[in-house]
Length: 253
Image (cartoon, rainbow, N blue to C red):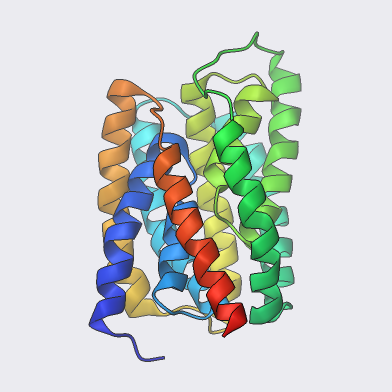
């Protein structure tokens, strides 16, 4: 597939913004995947290439969170095993669905996601901690479910993980963000492997956008270390609206 300079100009800045948002509060895929599709890439090519660029940024964010001591490695390792299973199943399922049907599914998912983003509670609310065993089990369940979602579609994975780990598993925000990054990196790599084997990744575009993703994640982790999770809802909602309009126009055309 031939890639134009305009597509790079659309995708790369938005992927930088997505990396920043993802490092701060998760959900960068709500910006990066629409960027690829707004630029005109077919659905499966967009998802596969997005896995490459977002995976590069997530790897950087994971390393920085690990260096800051935010990752509980024992818990993260168990979640990784569950995420591997879920992501592989989700990615293979996505490849079985045609572009047109996938877009129809997105028309259902996007409004639900937008409503969830608007109505979501603050990530900074700390609940009474559970026992280590209960927290770990709930985290593993969250990793499996969200891993399958990430492999199948992806956008909002980081946000959904953060919300589940803090609201359901009662983890502290910093630890939840660290574990979420490990899980997200795992699901990215697993899904990327599936898309690579099926020839659904544009390397030049993905690697270029990945550099912007790394820069965005670097800026985002710096921001998070100083100010925590600030609201990024307006940015997410703006891109979701544009994406929704783009899909509607594609289906009508």
